[in-house]
Length: 209
Image (tube, rainbow, N blue to C red; front, side, top):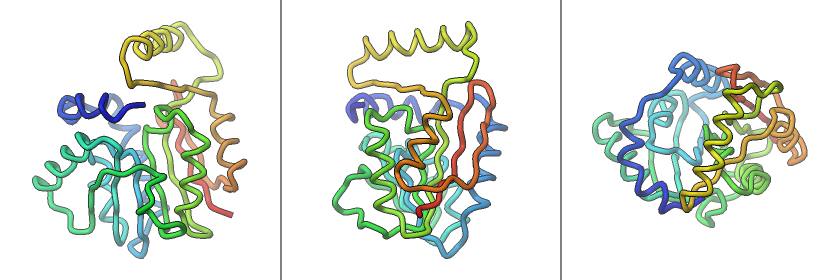
């Protein structure tokens, strides 16, 4: 996945609409249920910042990061229009040396893991950054148990896009495989759900052992 790819598309992405708003809002509700105002939170792959601005009121501090400078520029535009005092946006990745180990109560990543080439590496970095007993909350598009014609068509289109658009990659895997990545990395999964159910956008809350 290339930062340049997303830099070029950030402004257009910021104007796009959410396909299933009910599922999005319910995911936010479930995430907020695990947060409190004493928490220091890191979000990775924050995109244009919509989710950060919605969840920041539930925590003490909210640091939202993305590897795309273009996306962070759009975040800062949003923040100027809707000021939220405890939110900061900056360009960074999970492996950034400026992110101190065991310094966050929660690490969040929404609709991002399926776009990362090294998912296990990302989960391992999240484990490093969260405090003992802290949580990681993610929501990720996964492959359904029964892959109907529509899903196979969408995956074929994604494959073509991956081959024709330099810097874009996508990895869609079964729910069970994604959850095993978390348990193998040293997490206990404490809540799951799929919002929407088809194809499953898997919501996972995992606690560091």
